[in-house]
Structures are given as structure tokens and as C-alpha cells.
Image (cartoon, rainbow, N blue to C red; front, side):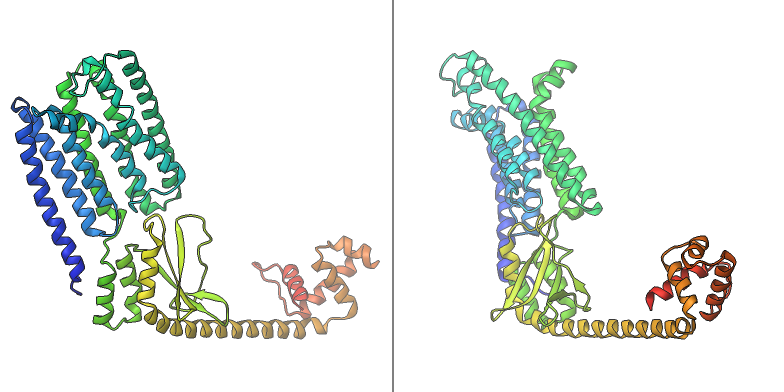
Length: 462
């Protein structure tokens, strides 16, 4: 097993220090800043923050070049900041008030960015933008102009403006949830069965969190009479389940572990770049277990796999795409990968450039296999043509002119009566001619064979 490169080891050390320091800092802030009366809430906040940080660091550890880990860690800090709204310190209360609902926008962001870490598509970008605007801009009138909110940022008594902003916030929240659901359903429909099993639980829980957090007051307090304290606890529990859902998605194959280009370089030096392990090394480095390498055969103008079988590059539809690999200005191969999983095509190109020499060496072997396949197929076609010619000559050529006329009409799908009318014969004469045709073509009566069809096929083959 190849050791991790110094870059990867350094990153993992930094992530470990980030986890330890973040947990220590979060615990200290919560214990110092929050009213001791809410001890249960403090403990739950600390647990939820730790869950977010652990999930984010795990994702970052598995895929250093992916933004999912950073987003999950950021969501953890948003949860921590929201908890400061109960602080006895004015400055910390301000931070908590402003960031009270940012974690909801970050959850929407995470769902749209999974698994590549990047938001893909104009619809997703607008939905995520609307989610952040809803959490930061439309949230402001509530703590600026509503005296009932008891906010440290209260500036003026304008309850009408606060109510209008709150109503608009609810409408946009519903629109964001519906838009997110539409995008996620379209991704599920485009995914294969294996990925769908991974994505369905994650997307379902994410949608539950998006809907439950803003409407929990209506559901819990309005219908079940739950007081605000326990409603907050329920919100925390649901929020804490978000990073768990993403962690399960990651561990169940949401995205594979990557080693980084430096580790690929280490693998090349240690193994000599054996062709049999090249595709597996690229898949591990880039992070796509279904990655495929297609080698370019110049004289035939096609791509082939390592066995010489023809490979069709993706045509731009779906989530599979390909990047070309060149060496000294000439095309040698293409790397086919999942663009939903790997949003940054440059990382794939970099990996291709790094192993270009090894790919070119393997291309020669693949080209040889392709030539062998083409030669075998050519021989098969020649043998089939010879067999068809032999069968035709040995049978068709022995027929009389009249028998050939009858067989030609049989090949056109004519019935015996139609043949008789065409050739001005009796049906009995047509039957006799057909019987002699079967004898000349060596077609005995067999229960499972239709001699009339076989005779027509031989005639057409000739």
C-alpha cells in the first residue's frame, strides 16, 4: 500500500487540529455565553455543533479538493452562532440574532451542492441565492422593527413592515423548498439505481429539515401546544440530523475517497505504472469509482478500451462526460467520468497529464487488441460470405428457369394462387415446382423449420 504524500498528510493533520480546536472553542463559548438556566439547551447545542464539525472533517478528509467538507463545517459554525442569541453578552447576542436562520440556507446549499461541492445549473444558483437572501435580508425586519422580538438590534417600532417581511419570508421559503424538491427529483430520475438508493434518504431528510425548521412553530405550537423551549429543542434535533444524513450519504457511496494528484505521482513512482492498475489508480485519485479510460486509435478514428473494444464517448447528455488526454500535441486517450460527482474538469485533466506517458504505453496495447478484434471480425465476415455463396451456388444454380421464377415470387411473399396467376400456371403445377425447389436446395421437411422462408432467404442472399 502506497503511503500518503506529505501534502495529504499535512492536510489531514490540519483537519485534525481544526476539529479539536473548534470543539474546544465551541464548548467554551457556549458555556461562557449562554444563560446557565438553559443547561439542557447548551449541551444539545454543543452536541449538534460537534456532529457538524465531525461530519465536515470526515468529508474534507475523504475528498480534500471537494467543497462539501468546508460547507458542512461552515454550517456547524452557523449553528454555534445561532446559539449565541441567548447569550448574556450583547455583542454575542447580536451575532446570534443575525445568524439565527443561516443554517437553513446552508442546508439548501448543501443539498444543491452534493456531491461535487459546487452548485451546478442556473436554477440551483438562483434557489440557493434566494435561500440566503431569505435568511439574511428578509429576517432583518423582524429583529429591527418588531418590539415583540426583544432584539438587541431593535431600532424602530414598525410592526406592519415586520409582518410584511415575515409573510414574504414564508412565501419565499415555500418557493425555495418547492424549487429544491423539483431539482432533487430531476437528479434522482437521472441517477442510476445504485446512486438513487444513496440519494433518496439524504434528499428526503434534507427536505424534511427545510420544511420543519421554518414551520415548526405552526405545527408544534399551533396544533400540539408545545411551548417555545421544547420547539427549539425539536428544531435542534432536526438540524443535528442534517450532517448525519450527509455522512451516511458519503459513507454509502455519495462520493468516493480521493488520494490527490501527489499520491498518484507517488503511485507511479512506486509501481512503475502497471497498465492493469492505472484505471483503478485514476479512479481513486479523481474520486469516481466508475471512471473509464478510452484509448485513441488514430488509423481507425475510434476510441477503445484496454481490451480493444470500441468505446463511444458521452454525447453531452446525462452526467457522464469526457476530457481528452494529449501528449506532445497528439491525442492519445480520453478519461470518462461522472461530472455530477466531479464538477472541476481541470482536476481530471491534471491527472491525465500526469499519467500521459503511461497512458500512451497502454494505448499501444489497446490498439493491438483492437487490430486483433478487427482482423477476427473480418475473417468471420469472409467465412460467412463463403458459406452463403457455397450454399447459394450449390442449390440455386441447379434450379431451372421456371423454378427460379417461382422462387423469386416466393421471396416477394406471394401465395401459391398469386404465383399461378402471375406465371399462368395451375396451382398444382406451382406446388410441384416448389417441391422440386425444396429438393434442389436440400430442404427436407422438418417440423420446426419453415422451408418456404428458408428458400426465400437463400434466394435473397444470392
